[in-house]
Image (cartoon, rainbow, N blue to C red; front, side, top):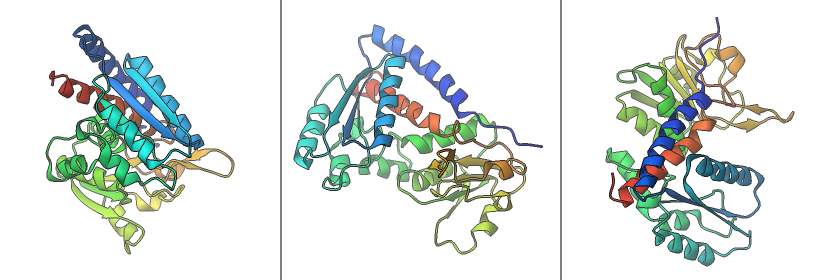
Length: 285
């Protein structure tokens, strides 16, 4: 019998419905959440992401600015724009779309974004607050992963969660958020010697390794929650996750599909962060 699907698109729409209601109330109080997105260069995937973020802003009633800069933009020019947005009262969230052209230092740009407007959750201060358990703007994809697990109704406290992947964007922060929910967390990565032995113990398995169909049914404990963060383009043009969905769904408990699982949650959590930032900056939090 196939496992129940965790429908990220449906969960995302439910959250957006709640956000839309909050934005209407805030706007009546004279505060409209504002998000500025900066895109440098012509990366096709980044252009799609930016369009989707712009659309989400319009759908939810946010104020939106998109700054599309040429690939030849200098680091100094980009930092000057970030500084301007930091000082703009109608902008509550700033997102500089990654990756940036090679001649621009990503760390310098991330560090230049005002902490209270860092809706990507990448600024070292926000990362540090996440590590020590203080309040912070959370990175969007990991926050979306936790929200999807919560929506299954399965208690995370006391469960063994295994995370495959140790990136700064997903693996590390999602492991910290799972610990915040009182799960016992094991992190696996490319150098883990006994990975399958560890994943077979997981009540919750989060896969973010960037390799198509890497995890098959032999990695999965029967009934485990499986969250697939992977998004890989196959030679035939189709999208595939890091989990071999067809085999794993016959063994697992609730599982996310690709597409339609974690993906829709990322922009929704970005919208939620922007709302939180707007309320804090507007003195309404």
